[in-house]
Length: 245
Length: 245
Image (cartoon, each protein chain N blue to C red):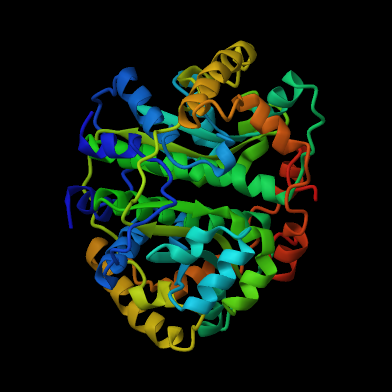
């Protein structure tokens, strides 16, 4: 163990921030750390839009399920998968770009995730905290319009950053032997392992909410998966030129 | 700046490793650091298959475009997006799972990317090095068969890890003002910025290869994008129950 691994292990989402601002030079440092992450075949497909303007922020907060911290966080970033830049590169060399492949959607989206994870780790190493905002995808067309995203660019998720004004506990994760398997996929013992883990999660929620939340992991997951999952995503992405083949 | 940010900024892919083994306890530590990353709505959709068996390793190396380091690296991990575990949770509660949504494919894949980025950062903090292996997707059906992956599980990428036996330079990234935009997407100056950056990349390759590789970023990207991008991915993923709606 070392300080970096301890830092990674101490991650929890921060949704409440002090008023203390974050300097633009700090944001730049975080973005550069994001760029340093691996990028699939050097595509560098992540563009970050930092939203500072008050009205745009409020609009985004509303689009993301009325999450007030999207308005309130000192820094709000939208991570976009960007193949428009690739189109530009192709145009510079009179090359006919073949787009719309699922593989390209995946690598561009992955690039954003690796980039963003470096950003949040770097932020936490400076004593900041933050949270990913997948809720932007609830109204992804509106978000895209607001940020004036062209074809071949889509908003993957947002991120709030700032100085923490809360100190939540680290959430317990699945047992190691459920997530790490040797040589082949074998889940023959996962049901009982998950049942045991369910008890840990129930304890965590009870303690954290003073007994108000009584929920296991499998209950939470099963409750979520009986519902539609943002069915507008595929048509939206198709409209942006992604996932067409 | 601090040691963690310096570590992130010093990332480069390592493809050559010494014979020194990596203890299983270290691998476990890395996986736990991976689990500590944020997970979309607590879905914890990443399963890692550690492949140690020689024959399976050699087979994977061949499937990944004959990349010898997939055979040779002391540790090889395959990161899988796993919704089979969610099906299990649903079965535990007699819930009818709605699957196949693009949104679910995205969040499960993102979970793997955030997890994996923590793994590689943790590894590098211990003096190890590594490289993501997207090449597994070249023969993704064969990889899936080899690892006995069931429906609702797919291999996103692999990762080699070990003690570095090479010391490549850090690759220059796009200028900050290309990847970080304020309040809206504005790429009106990107063409000239990329042209300037192209010069940096050309210099980097020339220095690194003793003048043998003469290539800019935009040339490299445009050369890649005139070709098909793993067109088997969508039918494969559909077959696994992903991206159906």
